[in-house]
Length: 151
Image (cartoon, rainbow, N blue to C red; front, side, top):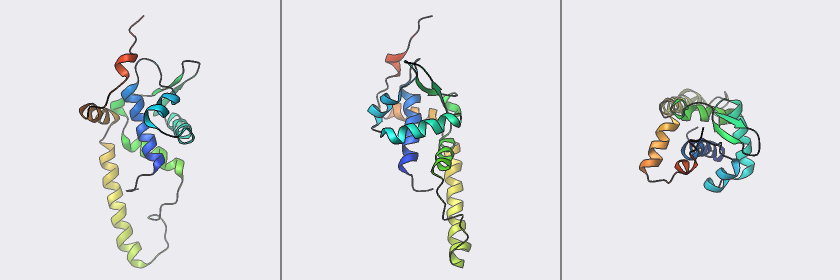
């Protein structure tokens, strides 16, 4: 888990893009692809998994797209990691029982401890935190241009 997969990076970038660039209208997948350069084959699969997990909400129709299913301060990076790990369904060598005794008794427990520490940090990091970092880094947001105050 200490090595981030493309799918996981794309999933985090996708949720962050929606949180950072969404105005009052849902964000369409084509907009995310254009801004982030995420290949459509990865994006659609990740979007659907995030909707099923309750991180995103899909909005149907011609002006449809995706929006956050809850406040961005309530979505943690760890939540996105768990969704993608379930999607990837890769066997984690740390969890396998094969191998030498040194690996089973020393290396795997060390790696499991490190993974636990990383996940604890990701549990404390919200999408809101990443939006603040993006703002501080000077990343332009399209959110202001998309706000609609009509009633």
